[in-house]
Structures are given as C-alpha cells and as structure tokens.
Amino acid sequence: MNGRTFRDPREGLGRFFLALIVFFAAFLLEVRLAAVIPIEPRFLLAALIALTFFLDFWEVFFFGLLAALLLGHQPVLRPESILVAVLPLLVSGARRIIFPFTGWLSNFFGFFAALLLWYGILNFSESLRNPGLLGMDLVVSSLFGFFIFQFFRYGYGETVH
Image 1 (spheres, rainbow, N blue to C red):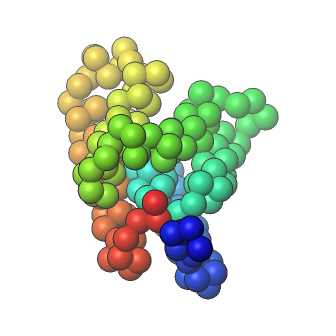
Image 2: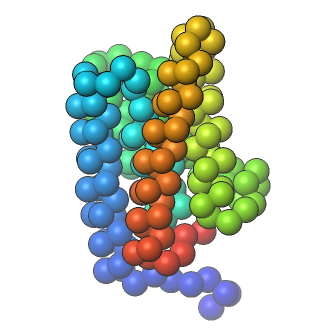
C-alpha cells in the first residue's frame, strides 16, 4: 500500500471532537479573559497552531474558518479574522520545510513566528510602544499552546504528519 498509514476512523472522529472542545475552551478563555487582564493572549491562535500537528489539513481549515467566523461576527471580514484562519494553515504547510525539528520544538517556533506575524501586521506600533505586554502575551500564549500540544501528544502519541 505505498507506505501510507491509515488512521482508524473512530480515532479520527474522537480526535476531531476533542479538538472541537479544546477550540471552544480556547475561544471562551480568549473572550472572557480579555475583560479581566490587561494583556490579550491569543489562546485561540495557540490552540489552532498546536492542533495543526494532530489534525488533517481540512480539519485545520475548518477550525480556521470557524475561528474567523466566531472572532469576526460581522458582515465584513476584518484582518484579525483573516489572519486567524490563514496563520495555522501557513504553519501547517511550512512545518516540514521551515521547522524540521521534533514536534514540540516545531510547535514553539511555529507559534512564535505566527504571533510575530500577528503583531507585525496588526499591532506593530503598539508592540513597539509597550514591548512588555507583547512579551507577556508571547509567554502566556506560548504556555497555553505548549499545554495543548502536550495534551494531544500524551493522548495520541505522535503527530499526524
């Protein structure tokens, strides 16, 4: 069979629904904590990038579009909505070429690069004005993404690709 391994469909379905729960938990954390703490950690982006290591392309695409819909909730696409849909796909595609390391290290570099792109495109002047908040956001979001990655790695053993 040309060397490809096929996953059990039940495992894929369980993985998808677990990813859906993680996705909505990250969304609620991002929305609820924005009113409480002075920084705005990108929990949803961190979860999406961590999930790219365990989900197929179309599942990542679905979650990216769902994130754009939930974060945008307006008839006009905003840059944040487009970036949250596109950045996980870029990390998923570039993971093997740009970050050919072990899974957790690729996750870290991929998330760090995605956050730098996020702030470079959306909030560049704000990032320069207050680098402490940017640093705190990077640390909190990276820890959350690392936790999600380790949670899935413990449950499923290895990454999809």
